[in-house]
Amino acid sequence: MKPIISTVFVLFIALFLVACQSDDQVVNLYTSRHYDIDQELYDLFTEETGIQVNIIQAGGDVLIERILSEGENSPADLFMTVNVSLLEEAKARGILQPFDSNTIVDNVDQDFIDPDNFYTGLSMRARIIAYHKDRVQPSELSTYEALTEPQWRGRLLLRSSSNMYNQNMVAAFVPLLGEADTRSMIQGWVNNFARDPQGNDRDQARAMAATNPEGDVAILNTYYLGLMLTSSDPADVAVAEQIGVFFPNQATTGTHINVSGAGITSTSKNVAAATQLLEFLTSERAQAVFAGGNFEYPVNPRVEPTQFLQDLGPFNHQTVPFSQISQSMETAYRLMLEVDWT
Ligand code: FE
Image (cartoon, rainbow, N blue to C red):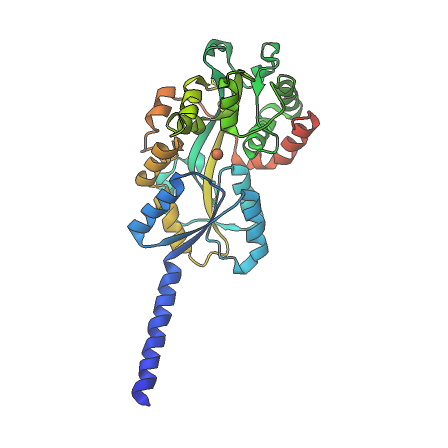
């Protein structure tokens, strides 16, 4: 009996060690990012560290509710999204914990890190004015506010008010302009709408380049134009070639940006591995993938943006604290509904 018992005991210990190790060798990532490069990044991370990344993909708001309802037993280690308002919401609702890593702090421009280290930015994206090169001269463009002028009547394309990029953009204007002026600005935009809001960012570019164009200016994220220019679909390449990029508000409040970022969940069982993933994602190697594969601006200042973005030139971005954007979200959405931005 004795040898059997000790064999069983040794096996048990071995299984226990494997279980401990495999727990440490996994990061469960809840993410709302939806880009082709993301899997490439996680594969590189696994190759470098041996740590597996399990992905749960859904809308950022859905993921927050899911983590809250899972409570202490939530398998989530990292929450990742593309709008700072949701990172702030996750922080405020207690589902994130501060990271403890000088590497992350050293990797990331401090403009893009939560001052309390509850999350870090991973990439930055500019929400610019896109215009049709044949029908609009860049000299006609200046600010987001100027898109309310009568010359743009029936020419402005925007996606719906339910879109988080637009909600975050309007929310950033509330502290900059005050509620009344933000309302007048978006009322002016609605008055100039080329059509009822529809489609995603790329669809606004497609509507400008259509044989029967529906509008001449739009507000969208730069990386979608980069993705279209390098698309395997020649129709998208042809669209992107007709579209120019203008960075608004350079002499005033700066171009609106949205920041994709991530934080470690307060219930994570794999904090060390989750921290390693954040360190990796902010490293020069990973930041070059965000930049090269998805045309996002790196948050690591040691990494250059891709040539497409370098050709667009440097720009001044808005510097509204992320907490203020988050606090203005309800006001922003109410204003959008009040002016009938559908
Ligand atoms: Fe996007």
